[in-house]
Amino acid sequence: MRVAVLNGPNLNLLGTREPEVYGRDTLADIERGVRERAAGLGVSLAWHQTNHEGEFIDLIQRLPDEADGALLNAAALTHTSLALRDALLAVRIPFVEVHLSNIFAREEPRRHSVLADLAVGVIAGFGAQSYLLGLDALVIHLSKRVARSS
Ligand code: DQA
Image (cartoon, rainbow, N blue to C red; front, side, top):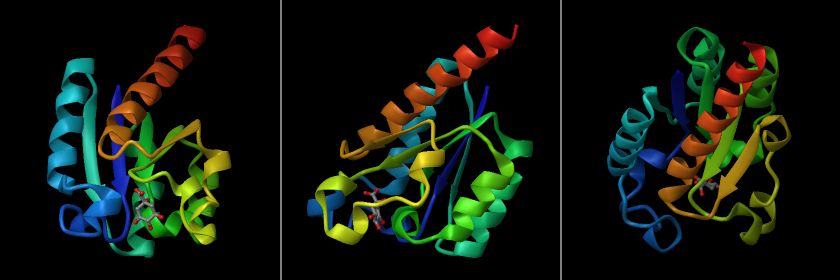
């Protein structure tokens, strides 16, 4: 099974960026943890981060070649980007939306995701752990699909 993780704008600054909201783990720390978990699950992992909406769209368009499913933390683009939504509608790949913070308990504009209804599910509020929970949930979802189709 192949999983791609797509990280959006400003997540490269984790560790120093608003640690009271996002914690002290860097993105590299999170990547290490997710890679370990993926290896334990027998999943091959591709990891990406971009600060650019167009590049994020390119990454989504490439997903069908790269992965069976994806973890997406689109960061602030989550709340605004119909272009990301359109890309996800076009590729129709199963994905789990993850957030470090509980976006539903934050300022009003962050409480809505323009992507979430396209996702298998959303995991938010568990810090770096959200990625691990998201990976577990995605792998369970993809395994069930494989079992059903065989
Ligand atoms: C975030 C939440 C977003 O609202 C914010 O813009 C981010 C990070 C999170 O993981 O909690 O950059 O996606």
